[in-house]
Image (cartoon, rainbow over all chains, first blue to last red; front, side, top):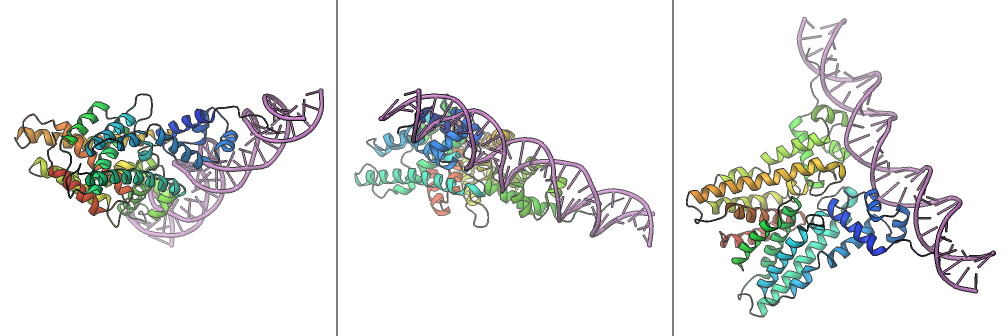
Length: 195
Length: 195
DNA sequence: GCACTTCCGCAGCGATCGATGCGGAAGAGG
DNA sequence: CCTCTTCCGCATCGATCGCTGCGGAAGTGC
């Protein structure tokens, strides 16, 4: 038997949940907030997503492919400079959108947590480290290609780009505007690559 | 009449509370965590500090004068380059200490909050903006002094330094080591000032 | 020693946290 | 229409949240 079909759109509900987590963080978003925004009851949420932590994991995955999808495209840019520029431009666009929360879910989702939230904090630490590692590997390839000066440290350059990106995310979360951040990263990139 | 004197050291208790807020954030630190670390009962905490939010405000003030005190000294450096270098060095030292929590209280204390924590979030937004503004004013003076090239944008340079500092704070909170961050900021400063 | 003030441990406040059990409603297959 | 499966609104769970009233203990000034 097939049974009664679900009465709401799972993707739509997950999108709404992602936005709430993005704005309030994992622990700052209560189930009441989430289910209200998703338009479903707590029962339906548990049946469809498991529990709050699983919901967050799925929301983070959706974030990575949606608002955070610029990273994939940035890594495909032809030169290391273009990669750095695309990462920073994407970060600024995503963290200062007019129709979405300010800042980056991967940064502000769970930078600090209570004793019971350590798993989610670790998840985001891994998420940020994964972003760093992918950029570092891309720069390593750029060195091999002769695109970056011989002897360049891919790890150092990736730390630099991610530090700027995370710094942008913090400032965006504080309300700093898109144009001002863009002017700042433009200036930083004029001195690319740092040595 | 004088009455019975307080049975604990207020400064010591505030120091302990600051460390708990630093590690877990404002909302991630429960009263049970705080009072246990402070070694006092909730009653004593309320009598001495008012309530949780007031305790946080006092802890933040203590942080600004203690672990965050490097900013004052950095602004007194003779050149803009030295100011930038001292800000970044101080940030790294403070966010990667072996005996204190990783990261920066002003960043991770309340980057995102629940509905009831907006006041504390705004407090930290103001705290970060104040740091930015002081650096900007210092750079403005550096331009007047001829220490920075004519036409330099003090606001842009201050955004750059604070973005790096906040980026360092996020990475330190993720467990990135002191030496690696130091190498990164050293490289960034070799291209100072960005234009 | 006495009177008086303040401190602080205990117990518990109402509210909210994440998470569930129950049972009628709703839709699918025969 | 009937049966069976699934969905989901309602009520509520125990735990924890920030916070406070009570009252004995403790220390101070006379």
